[in-house]
Length: 304
Length: 304
Ligand SMILES: NC(=O)c1ccc[n+]([C@@H]2O[C@H](COP(=O)([O-])OP(=O)(O)OC[C@H]3O[C@@H](n4cnc5c(N)ncnc54)[C@H](OP(=O)(O)O)[C@@H]3O)[C@@H](O)[C@H]2O)c1
Ligand SMILES: NC(=O)c1ccc[n+]([C@@H]2O[C@H](COP(=O)([O-])OP(=O)(O)OC[C@H]3O[C@@H](n4cnc5c(N)ncnc54)[C@H](OP(=O)(O)O)[C@@H]3O)[C@@H](O)[C@H]2O)c1
Image (cartoon, rainbow over all chains, first blue to last red; front, side):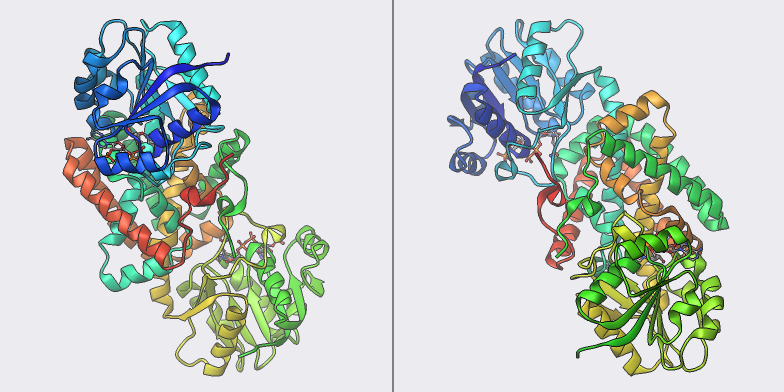
């Protein structure tokens, strides 16, 4: 199915918004791309990067006449954005988003969606640790999943049209329940980020001399955590404020397991350590087989 | 200072041993490279890869006549290896290793070092998650640190000669006390690996259906942990068996901090979360500035 929208409105033009703009333009998925953001500096940056066709600080103006509207701000801004754009949303338009949590988005956005607008929450499982309009690139979504969490009442044709839009940008699309999304993401993304932020925080609290050495000798393990912990603070604050229950549930399991492992280290239980370390290799092999990762050593990081 | 050894003996020819063989040959650092390993399959693989000049299953034969001997097996094998090679070690030879822990190595190896042999423990802070002779490459040590932990009595000229050997392979060399090494590595490498193994283990314990989804949707965060948790199980078992105190100390700090963070999530303390997530970005910036990491998004992983 080829898909084409008259007007795509992006509210928020950071890493994700700008990547959508570039991919949609490259694939010819919209006649017009309208861009809106909060700060005029960011808007000017988007304009200089030639990301769209129309630029405005007023999100209502951006969404007027749009048949596809995608919210791409941190989730904590959704309620205010919705209040601003709701009166300007066109009946028949598809309203979607890219937020990393979904149950909370439904709770906040759904009550503000005007009659006749098709609200279909979405989450592209793609990203890097960089942010802002210049961080985007058209290939970001290629071979990555995009999860849609339409409610039971939503128009099937609208869901199919949005799915076709994401597929045209290179994604594989999967539909699931918002709660289920939040639980799977808690373990694949939110708890790993929390743990990475935490260990980098532990280092940031070490006395200065030790800290400098940790930075100097960070090559083995720790620097991978710092990449994860370099992601946007506001976005991640909002993730933990809005997916609390699933995160605490998965963090609880993680901590239980860590107690067992801590004990194995304390008592010097070699067989238990080796058994766990062997079991975990299989998980990585599955991820590489599933096409979600490169098998190149060190992710293909340059070694010069 | 140009450096050249008559005979370099490598006991163990996995990722690290084979990388030393390749780098030493490329830089012309030894007239002869003798290779010894435990299993004949591995020895044949090394021979087919043309990693050295002489191949043997008998480590004593490999070290005979060598003026530089480097142990490159898991640390747990050192004691047995030392008992086998000690009678064959040449007076005046440098005996070193590449093990990821240092205090334990001193404890185990030092009593077995014959009079006149210069024992200088070492640890190249370089590696990937792959193992075996075919995983090695000559550039592995380029721009990475190599830490030497010579005891107070050791001959300065021998230390300088070994340092020159590592510098010739592209490393920056730093000398420090074995205990200090173990503490710094506990936080930069050992605890991150423990945490990564643990979270991947938590996933491996999920019921099958959820686990398949985690693998499918692993792109954001989790798959970085799986890379770390794909490292060699025996090597890492030995690390935790032999650097227990420093690991437990740093793990204790990590867990304290995680309790605070868990509470911030539970009570929804947005400012505390944002403050931590902002502070951690600075640590990554320092690591990139220190030349220990690429600034490319996603480590420069291919996005197609
Ligand atoms: N980064 C990832 O890896 C990733 C992956 C998947 C999904 N997501 C989701 O994508 C969304 C955007 O993330 P991103 O990485 O693209 O963020 P980003 O690069 O930081 O960009 C955020 C955008 O939202 C705008 N914005 C921020 N606060 C706002 C507010 N209070 N009111 C209105 N606009 C505001 C920013 O505008 P100004 O610059 O004008 O202030 C900017 O245009 C988030 O919901 C996140 O959960 C992110
Ligand atoms: N991997 C890293 O990222 C990294 C980084 C820095 C330092 N290190 C250190 O480097 C050392 C080697 O690691 P690696 O990654 O090169 O390992 P590897 O690729 O798994 O190779 C291990 C080598 O040691 C031999 N070996 C294993 N068990 C042995 C035993 N019980 N007796 C005698 N030989 C044995 C193996 O021989 P067979 O195949 O013949 O059995 C193989 O030649 C370890 O001490 C590790 O702490 C590793």
